[in-house]
Length: 403
Image (tube, rainbow, N blue to C red; front, top):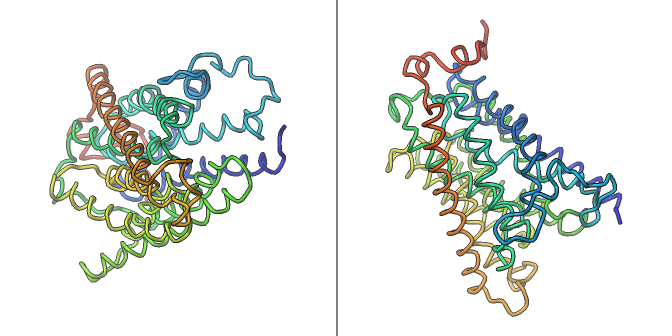
C-alpha cells in the first residue's frame, strides 16, 4: 500500500539528488577550470544527465532492478512496459522509485567529468558516459541494490560508497591516466577561475546530499532522520579538518580546500549513513578529511596524475573508507543499528572488502575496454590548439563570459 508521507519524502529526495548534478556538481566543477572551459563542463554535466535519463528508461532500470540474476537483471521492465501506474515498491509508487534511482545513475558518470576537464572531445565524453553507465554502473548497482551476488553476501552500502563513489573514482583515475595530463601539468596549470562558483556548487551538493543519503531509507522515518544527521556531521567535520591542515601547512586556509573537505566527508559517510550513529559520523568525517587530503597530494604530486578535480582522492577513496568503516561502526555497541545476527565486526569487514575488491576490479577492467573502444571510434583528446584556446568557443561556439 502506498504511504503518502513516504511518497512525499521520496519525491522531495529525488528533486534534491537531481539538484546535486544540475546545477550543483556542474557549478562545483565549473568554477575549478579556466574561464575558457566553463561552458564545456556545464555542457558535459547537462548532456550526461539527459543521456542517462533516456538510457535508464530504455534499459538501465530494468537491468538493475528486475529479475533475480546474481550478476545482472532482466529485460522485463524495458521502457517501463508492463508497469501499471499504481505499481508499488515498498510503500512508494514504483514510478517514484524509478525516478529516485535515476538521479543516482545520473550523478555517477557525471562525477567522472572532474577527471578529464579541459581536454576531452565532446563526442568521446558522451560515448564513454553512455557505455560506462550500462557496463559499469548498472551491473554494480544490481549486485549491491538489485538483489545480486553482493547483496546476497550481505555487503552494506546504504547510499553508494561502492555503487557511486568507488566506481566513479577508480574509473576516473584510469581515464585520467589514459587521456594524459593537461598541457603544462602540474606547474603551468592555471588556478580555478571562480572559487566562489565552486563554493556555491558545493553548498548545493551538501544540501542535495540529504536527499541522497536520507532518501535511501525509502521512508520518512527514524532511519532517514539519522542518515541526514550523520551526513551533516561528517561533512562539517571533514571541512574543518581540511581547513586546519591548510592553515597549518600554508598559513592560509582556502575556500576551495574547505569545500573539497566537505565533499570528502559526504562521500565517506555515504555508505555508512543508514547504519551508524553521530559519534561514528564525527570519526568518519575526521578520517575522510585527513585521508582524502593526503590522497589528493599523492595523486597530483607524487604520482603526477592529472585527475584534474580529484575524483579518485575525494570520491573513490572517501567511498572506500566509508565502506570499510561501516563494518566497524554499524555494530550496536558503537551506536550503530547492529550487524546481521551472528555476524562479527571482522566477518563483516571481510564481506565489505570482498565487495570493494570486486567493484574495483570490475570498474577498472571494463572502463579500460570502454576507453580503448572510444579512442578507436572517435578519439579521446582535443588538439593542442583547441586545448590552448579553450573548449567553449571551439567545440560549443560560445563563451562563458562576453565582456
